[in-house]
Image 1: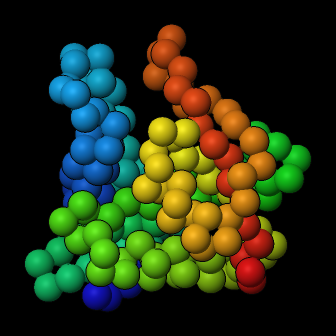
Image 2: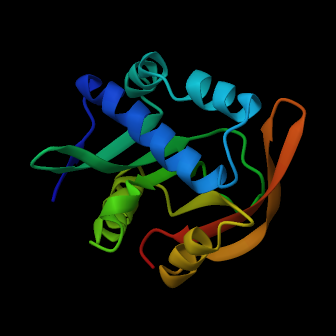
Length: 170
């Protein structure tokens, strides 16, 4: 496993991994047109290329001999859901399911925390779908603390998310 800063040429791989992980995590009973449309419009090469050119976005990828198998994205935000949140959000931490259990998520999280520290952030925050027990267990195991809830929205639909925070040097 090699960790490195994402490059513009990684945009297609980041989009593909995002579709794979998002659909596999949240659409367990089938793929409706509503969710397919969201995934195909949200996780595009063009959107990732733009994101990688934004100075408020920081993406670290995990790469094996065949390509990227996971990534962490940190976003510096002005608007945060709670006053206890810093301006640095872990907006995405995705690892391809077939690579789970190999330490990739741990390594990406560690590098993300180092990156947040280098940005001067004392802590990071993130949201996780309230029904995503494996993700919640992962974050709690790594020292995150639940501080509240918010909603993830797709058009008029709202999905309950838990909000977690953790000190960078914890």
